[in-house]
Amino acid sequence: MKIHSVLALALGLAAVPAAAQTAETAAAPEATTAAAPEIKGGEILWSADGRRIGRVERVRGSTVAVVADMKMVYVPLSTLTASDRGLVSTLTRKEITRL
Image 1 (cartoon, rainbow, N blue to C red):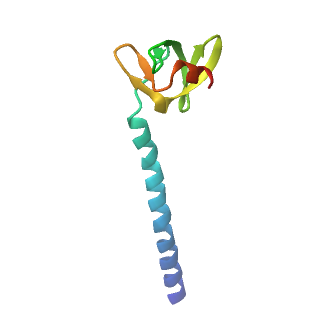
Image 2: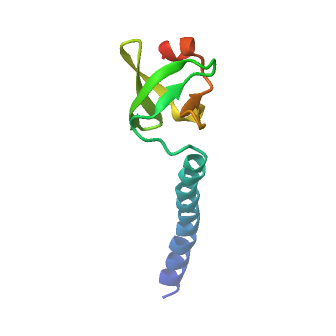
Image 3: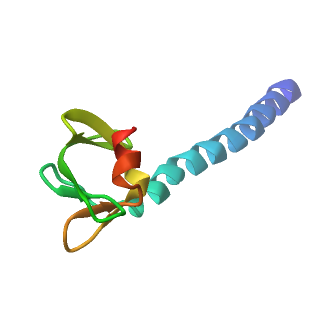
C-alpha cells in the first residue's frame, strides 16, 4: 500500500512542471500577435522611404505576400505598422525587393 502511495505522489509531482510549461508556451504566442496590425488582402504596402510597394495578396504565417517588381515577396509582419495611408514597413524598397 505504501509503495502505491509513494508512486502516485511521485507521478503527481512529475506532472506539475509539465503542466506549467504547457501554460507558459500557450500564453507566449498571444503576446507576439497582439502587437501586429490587423491585415487584410488588398491593402497597400508602403516602404520606409515612402515608396509604394504594392497590394497585399495574402497573409502567410508571419509574413505578408506582396507583388513587387513583378515578383512575389514575403515581408515579415514584424516590420509592419498601420497608418492612415495603409501598411508601412520599416524596410526600404530596395530591402523589400531583395527578400
